[in-house]
Amino acid sequence: MSYAIKQAFKQFFRNGAMSAASVFSISAILLILGFFFLLAVNVSNIAESVKKDFDTIQMHLLDSTEYAQSESMMKKLKLMPEVAEVQYLTKDRAMEDFKKLFGDKAYLLEMRQENPLPNSIIVKVRRIEDVDAVVARARGFEGIEVIKYYKEAVNRLIRFTRFIQAGALALILFLVVISVVVVSNTIKLTVVARDREIGIMKYVGATNWFIRGPFLVEGILMGLVSAAASAGIVAFVYARVIDLFGTDLAVMLSTRFVPLAFMASNLSVIFAALGAGIGACGSIISMRRFLDT
Image 1: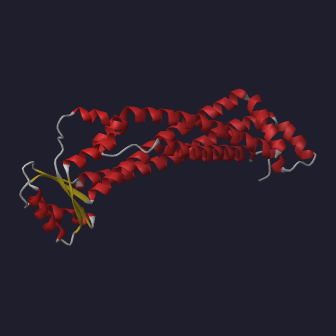
Image 2: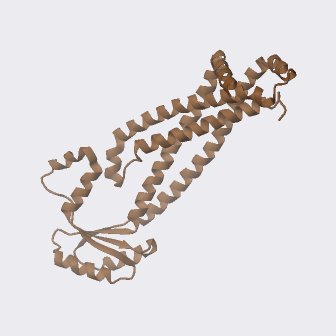
Image 3: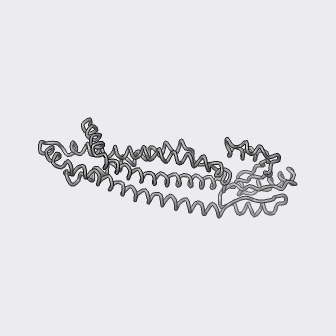
């Protein structure tokens, strides 16, 4: 193992141009995979957040609606077998929840002298399929300004999420194959250049794995260097996206981007595994012509 690692580092720096070409190619592919991964995870996160809200119906009340009238509506709703829970949400509590979504920028909401949010009745249904029945019942009440629920929008979002996930998986498989071919061809050039040396090693009794070891480690090294570079770039870009659009997403969809720390740690592991795997596979394939398998 010590010999393989030493030789791998020597070959990596000795063939600087070819190593750089492989690292650049793998990095470019991992970057594409990384951005698709970010997109797929955040779209899934938004879909899950919306799905959680989908079994919840929010009934915004008129300013003139008294609490006693709201309490009467809540009692009638609780009698429905489709309803799991009913609660009253004051406008002040709604504003506090809204401020939490803004995080450090919540001070912007303090500039408003009046609270524009309405009092609401929040209804949680037992099954998503029960939403229509509860909404139909609620429309017969007086004192409700608007009923918020987004059945069609959520269904479209779920379909879009599945499409993104399937597309990302197909792209990952396609790009991994390309990466393996690129690394394989790069290491194959190194193997050809050392063809005579390999022949002598086999003649004096070196085993195939003794010969294959340095090339295998070299491929893994290329993959790990590419993974480190790609993970750093993706994390930097993602941090900038969160800074620029994080608040807007919280306001528009009442959800946040997946935290940077979570994404960075998981991407690092995924990239390291993919990079090392791509490099190892490329090395093994490139040696098949020269060694018995």
